[in-house]
Length: 462
Image (cartoon, rainbow, N blue to C red; front, top):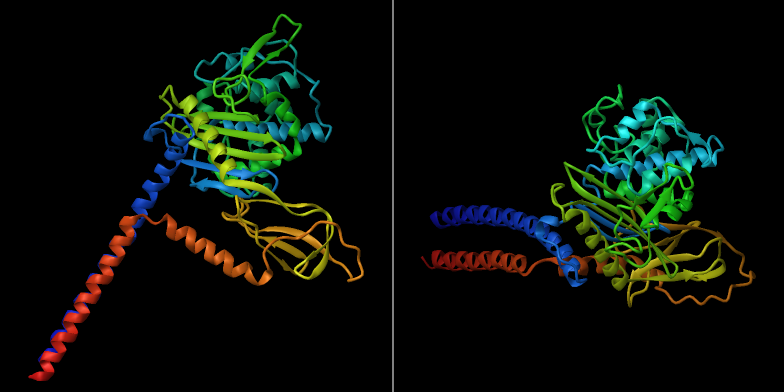
């Protein structure tokens, strides 16, 4: 009797001990995973021949396929940050929408006021000098907003669409909602807080001192939509320098803040844009568009270094360049099916568009037909947080097939293979210390169990 009570007490202690050890292990996993995430990106950068320090580790990073939003690299894609001048891309988006709708044109002239000229002279803000009373074509203001990130030019463009500052910010937030940017809020048109304009730019219904807020995922949604709707903006953003107001007394050469474009210090072949941003709160940001050999990728790096760091301006590009190189080495574009009538998993279907995805090199994409959709699995999902889907039309058996030959995974393997791949990927990511800790718990449990059995046998002998 006494033995049973003793064993019961010991068992309770064992359970408590195992629970405590399990919680400790979870904490260790979380801590080590975070450290490893930081070390992994630092290793990627180092392996590509760039030098940065641990203090330069970005708060968030993301590389995606522009074609379908497929994620090829991600770290903290949903972490909220201050986008700073990346916000100007939303203003440009709205301006170009207005151009497409015929409300304004690139040749329209805008005349700065004394207030606009005063804004252009605020040295604490990125700017290009403007002269009150001079006619500036919209196209020249766009160049100023995109390359040297002129706040004055951006304000002029926003007021051309709607001269009420609050209502223009409303348009920005409305557009963000339409694009599915669920973690984004704009307070101003340029990315600089309104109070930094020394009274020359104010809002009433939005904050004067709070920065804009967004995430890498939301920025990816915005930039992909912007690029697909208005790819012509890259005719400006691909340049290291441009001359604005040519042939006038106000001509000047402007410099791109994107050091990854051709002709700049950290030029990366294939980069055709897009924008940088810097804030006191979150440091240095960078968005790059890569276009080469039929591949289009979006490269986002947010929160690099402290904003007081002189090296941060360049380190964001080192990281962005390194991530592109890493992704291009790890993945390859595959055309699963061409447009036309195909036999997929024994069914004849019609595809209006080619099915192209990225897969890890040496591997083949998996897919499944569900109803009138072809669903394709991807290693890390998409920025839209849903599977890649393509509309299909079922065809009668006598339909003529296209000449494309299918060489992909059987339907019966689809779900098990995805689960297996994800499990293997997770296990490989776990550090050795975690495994040692886990087997340590198992060993403790085993030894105590043996002890209880031995104790029970002794009691029975008595």
